[in-house]
Length: 122
Image (cartoon, rainbow, N blue to C red):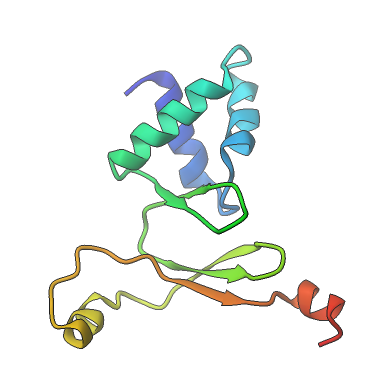
């Protein structure tokens, strides 16, 4: 693993903010000021393909990156705010419902965050 990949993995694992590639790039530049954005994208893609990090995609928003620790997400429909939620491992229950083995799943629960609810007068 390259020095960039190691540092990117460290940044993602230590963050609980679901950082975008650009945010990771800005953080990485603190250690490696000459790094370019393409290096970050290439390493993020490699780490994702190696299943060392998770890519969280939300329609209309840039991809964000997360730890691989088993957890699910709450996604605000209005602003895209992303929060971790621990519902436990649902694999066995889902396999029973669908009648086949499940390799993995990515559960995103859509809601309106408190800020967006206030803006809508809810």
